[in-house]
Length: 131
Image (cartoon, rainbow, N blue to C red; front, side, top):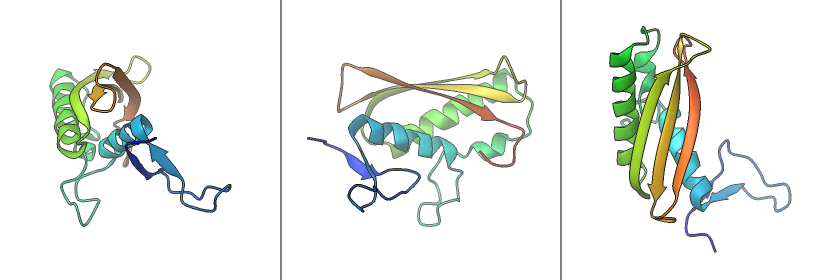
């Protein structure tokens, strides 16, 4: 039986049941982390500090200072907003294929599966107006 559950994102109806699609356990944590990374601060009116706030890094030159600032912003936001983590490590590197993009690698351990490290990898374009 699932210990965690939440609405799947994007929100959709489960055709088999006619109810809102749900996500459980590690998929729920993974989805929450992605939402934290993709949400800009101020975007959610009832939680104005929610999100990593990566839009502030748009159109900046990708260098060591920027990737360190992004890593810290992502890690702090995940630690603050995802309560089911025992540990999180965030790495940001410039993309080899696109000089205006970064690869974000997030490794985390949840309290659901304490002996297992999970990973999320995502490329983020820094020359777009929205993540």
